[in-house]
Length: 447
Image (cartoon, rainbow, N blue to C red; front, top):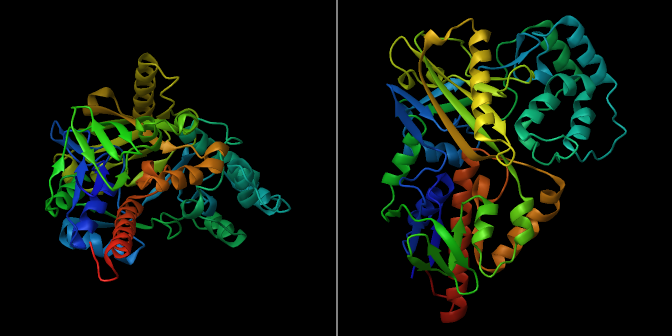
């Protein structure tokens, strides 16, 4: 029996294990359902190209996370980039964030966005849905031409069904001064938002972080262990291969609805169905030309394109593509419950056709292609989640279960938060174990 069991060896699970060990605690076991750790932070080699499971880049605005990256990877193993992000809108490019840089738009559209910003409905004191929130903070023009169509693509939902609580630091606010400046002076970069700079591994793709972090652990990771039942009263995890593990404290980084289905006795039958997320089709393309575009990534609200974003692997790091080649990824959100394999194939083929047309390319320019499906991608912040997510976590905590990370906590977050979530839950569990030991054996007891 290990006192602590960790389900999932993605970034949050590995961070929890790392921080337990950094505190001198090794009485834990970590299990991963796949044949290798990493979760979505995996990279694959394909025809001389390296592709990740969608765009994962390292944003740093927390001092500890900056130290952590330097400790695990080292500065020489990372490129530091000044963000080059754009929005493809009305057949032109405007710098990110849209709500500060209207100079790439047709003059009439820019004028509409500015006037609607001035006339925005400020009387609405507490907008709840994302649609209300968007129009309250930015006006109807900016909402219509970017925030609404882009977020409808990601969520596959009517935005009256989506809450605004996820926005936080992820959607930069604006001002009339910024709007006017960004209309008169067309910018190619901005310091706004949570990611004006970012880091990316020099070699090996994003999986380099996972490989380096794994190598720092003394305890081994038990792969090919899919949890199929968690008896929360007896504190026993049963795996698909028949093995069992008992625990005092359990950390789960699996997608929350998936984890709730494993609980026995059943306690969250409604939540299993009510918590929803979109899936993502990530189309990775290698091209036989050096560079398509100087941008790191581009947001695409336009309905004529199936993808909501595309990014350039080879601009993150030249090692992602062979010499004189380039590589990109296209992201398409879809509802896995209503999208058939045939429909998904049509989406993919149509998206690539429109992308080639956008850059005046032909199929002969494609050196390779690798499609990757991500079943759980963007958490849907609907009203049910808003009302119940805290209750679910509190009830799990009663059973000494901690569901953490982007999908364990069922939230929208970055890799920085994944590492900090792992650190925080490790520290919380250690404090609880010490407190329990002190109650049982006296004030000098430790773990």
